[in-house]
Each structure stands twice: as C-alpha cells, then as structure tokens.
Image (cartoon, rainbow, N blue to C red):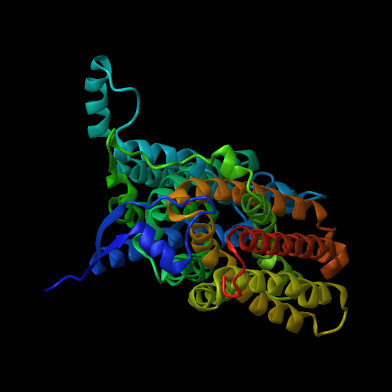
Length: 480
C-alpha cells in the first residue's frame, strides 16, 4: 500500500495560509514529510486524550450534584445536612482538576522540549554520562505514562476520602496534575501535523471533549446511583488505566524537535519572550482566555443542580449534561470547518457573542420567570449555549498558530492554557458563592447567570481586540 506524504516548508505554507507571527520574516526550515497514516494516528490519539481528560472534567457537575445530595456515601458529615451546604468548596474540587489539566502545560511543555533535544544542562565531560542516562530514562512516554498512573492513584485515593479537603488533594490536585501530564505531550504537537485544514483537524480533536462528556455523564450518574461514590471512583481509576496506557504510548514527537542548526539540535521555544508578551494581540488573547474559561465552565457545573431545582430528577440532569456535551462536540467540528473558510477570528468572535447572548436571553429569563416556561427556556439555553461555546475550543489552537506563528505555538499555547486554568479555578467557585439559598428556587441562580454573561461578554470584547490588533499589524483582511 502506498502511503501519501507531504513535505511542508514552513515559510511557504505559512505564506499561503496567512499563518505567521507579526515579526517573523526570516524563512523557516523545511519540515520532514508527514504521511496520512501518521496524521490519522495523531488525530485519533489526541481525540482520545481529550475524551479522557476534558470529557471527565466537563461532567464533574454530576459528581458535584451527588456530593451535595442526601444519597451520597463519601463525605462525613453529609453536606446536605449542613445549614449552608459548601457548594463553592465542592465546586473547587472540579475546577481545580480542570484548571490544572490546562495550567500544567507551563511546566510540562518545557520538560518535553528538553527531553526531545536532550538539553538538560550544559554539555561538559562531567555531565555527558548523566545526560545519556537521563536520555534513556526520560522520554515523552515516561511523562504520559506517569500521568496515567497519577490519575489512577488520584481516583483510588479519592475513593477512601471522607472530607472535602481530601477530595481536593486527590480528585482535584492529583488527578488534575496527572491529566496535564497526559494532555500536553499529546496535544501540543498536534497542530504541527496539519496545515491547510488545521482548524478542521483541531475541531475534530477537540470534539473529543464533548464525546467523552456525552458518554461519561450518564455512565457516572448510573454508577453513582447503583454502586455509590466510592466504587464509582474506583471504576474511574481502572478505566483510566486500561484506556489511558495505550494512548500514553502513542504520544507523537514534535516535528520541530528534528530541526538542527549549526550548533546542533535546536530546542523549540517553550517560553513567552518579553517582546511577544507585550504585543496587543497577546495581551488581548490572554485576558479573553481568562474570562472565557471563567465563564464557560459555570453552566456545565450547574446544569445538573439547576435541572433538579426545576423539578426534574438527577438522572435527567445528567442526561442534559450529556446532551450538552454532544452538541458541543458537533459544534467543534462545524466551527472548525467554518473557521477554515470564513476566517478563524471572525468565527470565534461570532460564537463568543452568541454564547454571551444566550446566557442573558435564555438562562437569565428562565431564572427570573415564574411561569411553566422556565424549563423550555432552560432547554433552549442548553442547546444554543452548548453549540456556541464549542466554537472557542475548536478555534483558539488554530488561531494561536495563525496570529503568533506555528513556531511560537507551544510557548503561547502553554501560557494561554495556564491562564485558562486560572480562569477555570476562578469562575465556578465564585459562582458557588453567588448561589442563593434553596428557598429561593430558581431565583437562587440569578446572580450566577449575570456573572456568567458578564464574563463571556468581556471575552467577546477582548477577541474583537485581538482581531483589531492583528489586522493593524499585518494589514486588514475581511476573512481572518
């Protein structure tokens, strides 16, 4: 069978697609050919990684609702028996895990870069033997397999917890760090394997988050109802071990790791320079990432509990969260495809504006109305919000490559995801503090809806700023 390959000279490709940094004008090196089979392998491995990590994080609301219910068998005493349930504290368990999954890239990416080039320290006679030993022991597979082990250990230890602070250390901290060790080595090099259809490919990869949430939400709810919280956590430990190890073994090597200079192999840049960090495009992108991450996770955290407040069952809440993830997955593919044709920045601004508008038009109206239409408005919100929110996840990796250049992708992506991690750990806990008491019914969620809408509208304005600054620096184009 003949395997098709394509040689991609970096400078030529970026010139064709408009991808490049604002100051990069030097011709780039030619990258090694990529076979279709290799592209498919990277696509599948990255998709499964997203499903396993982001998919779980997006359905933590099922665990949160369970921990706050009277049926839970993990926490002693039960939060439901307390006069003021610790909703914000429990929400922080999920957001800590989600935040570390993203934020860990600022640590993981430099480690992976040094592993790929073997540049751990200065090359002297006294360090060569140590470097050879490290090269044999430390590989990208070592990092990803360590991540799988950490995730399994976190879920196992969480199954023996009896207090929220113990869940924070296990299901939050340890699982989050482990997921970061699996996520970044597989996701960071993925855009390097695609060129003209990069946004479409990343949309397919990132659709794994919605696909994973679609499966894990009802499965988690069923397991929590049938075997309880402790055995559900142990199931997650075994599931991540069985599914995660093959994924960890398939970690791809960065294509820039093979680029050599006169001084030897060049280590790809994993740090944001002062010049890059001072650009308006970078500042606007970082603020937009923080605000979007803070706002995007809020509805997912409260879909199960708000659905119960509307008089539905916990299982129906989990099913709505699964439906939200399914719509989100489809949206990531569609918006990735649209971004390649209508302009990634244009599509991103439109989707963020639609997400912010859906909060004010449907969720806030559902909260403030006392009529029987509250449930219908809530369902309309879930559909529209899930579709529009998926656009940011699908487009921002390709947008980073387009605005800052593919050779800056690893550095900028790691920093932006670190900022997103901080935003995630900020949004839902604040939302938990804004939640009113249960006697208010749906009105208890009014402040959360206002907070969510304001965050997403701020992110939209910042993305308009990115569009303006990028056009000012490179020359205005309607399709960008």
